Image (cartoon, rainbow, N blue to C red):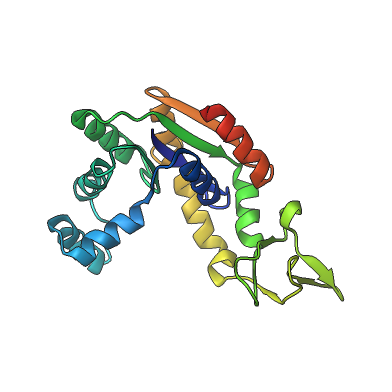
Length: 221
């Protein structure tokens, strides 16, 4: 089974992707890892990509798409691709490349979450001083931190909490969301492009992880 997964920052896309990957026993392929692997191995595409990255430029699609395609072709039993495409042009290029190679795209998953809720979830994330794997978010009831003497503490162990600086950068969050929620040329436009060509499974990202995953797996069959 070959799957693309979409969701804005804060939607739980990574968590749900891991659940789907485990359920269907397919690799969870992230574009960032593909870039790093190609660059570290010194492949032709990796070398070309590094030249752009070193200059601080975006890697053009004519390099990115073949790099991703090569990785997908390594998997004979399916894959879950995460982090690409990010815009309409990339969606068109990827879909045409898959068709040319005779690779079917079985499903596209869209975790639906409104922009304000997504922003709140990002800014509400808190890190436990004792264990970063303890989930805490001041805007999600299921994992809301405990309170002690008027201060939030880890809901799991009672440890101190802190926020990552990038999670509090509203300008950076806004820029990422500007791209994602753009239905003309951005990520939402890419999702709409796929809706005209393959089965797109939309799930509400507002409930808890368990509820979202149950709905998603039910729709995937």
